[in-house]
Image (cartoon, rainbow, N blue to C red; front, top):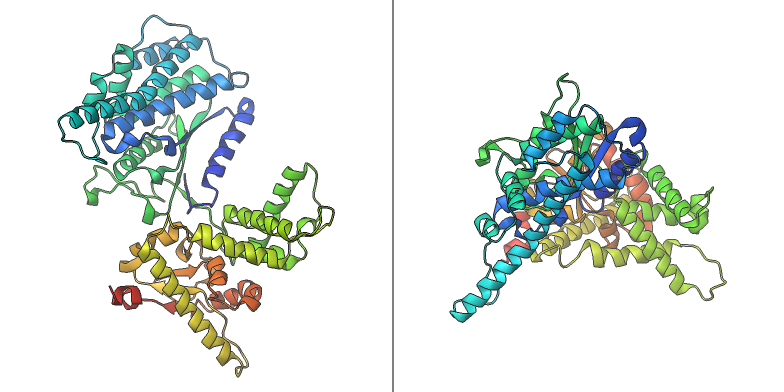
Length: 503
């Protein structure tokens, strides 16, 4: 299963929750979870893909053995009739003599921990040595990047057992090695299956992502003898396809990995028009308050908000992103504290507090300088400007119409220009309705092509919608727009935008 979403949608939370649930229910269900964050992968992954393989697969081994050690009260080792599996694992890691399973696991973990540690220490050592030698020869310039290869790494690795494991994990068949490791471990622990939880896969380099999906492809086919269950399954968190490098034979890779075919896809972001939208954020608020207060909360809204409008504005400006909603709540509370005259004076979050919080978050987080480049800012500014101009014109025309045209935040764009919006999509400045659009809002006569929307927080921040009517627009106009099949959405051509005209 691929857990897909942009930043802040809760991908990491979902994987960690799966891990926690599996551990807590292990005695009954016997499902072994192994969580790995690709964010911890060495910065040297780009210099030699074989070094990335070593760190990836060594991390999987150490994380697996760590969870077995940490949760040994729940995870019982089957000590009878596992001699063949023990011998196989010993051969896999180049070990001899040790037959006690506990000691064997400790030894294997120690070897892989050492290997991971050396992956950081040795490249640093090589680079420092290279810099000193180059400076002596006056041939080294500041900022020059020195590549570290697998051969460099092994030349500085003295322990033979560690070297053996490193060489085993470095090559292309290492993914198969890991599958076999889980097959043998299943016989020793007698679990039903293991779940590999790979987080932040899309943050790796393109070549590293190919290796990750090679492993996932092999896991998909790792059936047991009855062909009904696997030794190991996976959940992997990824960005949407426009920001994930899926392997393809058409791009010269030896295999394909097709989301939907090789793995199911669960997109996390909730559509703003979903019938469950308000209920979801209501429940999220209640759960968070109960965690903070340590008691049951009966009326979530009246507990911290002045009225329902303040809650609804925070929920809709989150645009279906849980982390954004919690940030809005935090900033709204900070605003409340700043305007409270006395510590004893009891006040609650107002609609004004939320509006101010949205302004702060839009400027500092959504439109983050380190996530967007100059062209991104120019594009989003012009999108907001064009939507604002259209909505103001519609407001004027609606005064004389018995059936007013709804305000709009939706637009279409050609597929050939879609890639120019990648940063804006990942950052949540605009949203891909193709990933969230509800089936009931598809109409034959409606809008076609790639349907996008301006983020609701940004629409408020930039004045793309009437701030006085913002909540009514979010609750009603957007639904009216959708019911028409998005007939009122705008069609944009980036080639007509000013930022390109005057380049």
